[in-house]
Length: 179
Image (cartoon, rainbow, N blue to C red; front, top):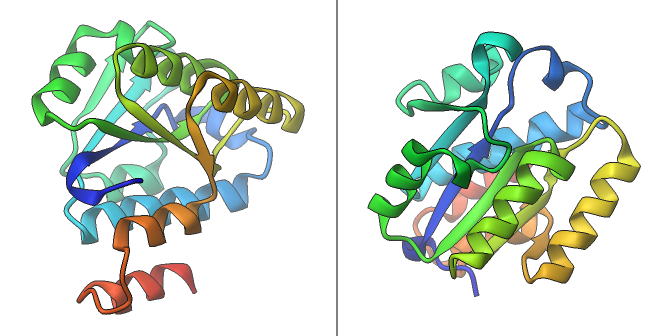
C-alpha cells in the first residue's frame, strides 16, 4: 500500500515543445498539477528532471512555477536512474516508494520505472499523469510497467491512498484538488 511517509514524487521531463504534442495534454496537465499540489499539501518530497534541456527546452512554465522550489536535474540518459545526480537526490530521501509522473510514458517513465524496480523501490505510475505522443505507446508502456511489477493507477486512487482517511486534516484541501 502506498504510504505518504514512505513515498517520493518523481516529476519526469515535462518540458518544451515535446510537452505540447502529448496525447491528452489537457487531462495530463490537470493530473500533473493535482499530483504536485497533493505532494506539497502532504509534504511528500519531489524530485524533478529535464531531458537534455539545452535541446528540448526547460520545464513548461506552468510546472516551473508550481515547482519553483524544486531544482530540476538535467539528464541525457532516458532513465532518471542513469543520471548520478538524480540517484543521489532520490537516495538521499530514503524513500522505499516512488510515484512517477511525466513524459514520455514509453521512454523515460518506462525506463525509470524498470530501473527503480530493479533497485528494490516500490513503483506507482500515475496512469493519467503520464503520456506519450500516441495513445498506443502510452498504453503499451503502462502494460509493460504493470507486468514488470509497478502499480499503475489513476491520480484519484493515488491521492486517496496517500490521504487514507476522511478524518485526516488535509482531506478538505485534497478534495479541492479533485473537484
